[in-house]
Image (cartoon, rainbow, N blue to C red; front, side, top):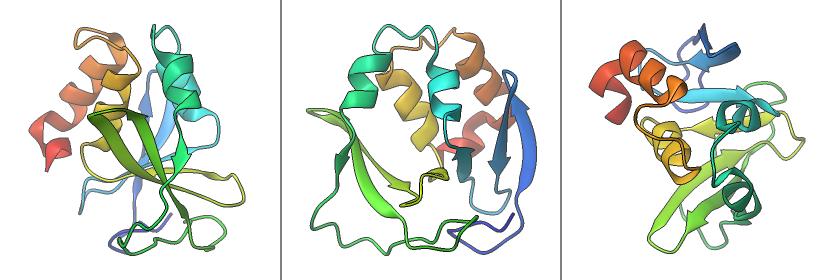
Length: 132
């Protein structure tokens, strides 16, 4: 799969039984539809986070193309108040794109503790590289 941010080929990694597509060049992560929910499973704020997704209107950031269907992705704001993250979502529902560090932010907003299995795996796999 080609990275929607930098155009490099991504690699497939397994994160807590969820296959993620990771770009070695820019640190971005692609999650297929439903995979974020699987990673957030057990997070106390999961439902609150998922219902917080709102269209990012008037966002001037360049729209990325879905790595599956190549359609321009919509900008979404996720989170509440001062904990907002700008994500990219395929208009056909293929999945979500997370720029470097954004997945860890989303998992934190979803209530997953730093000691949770998924967050620990992210740190082990990417260290500080994911926080570029």
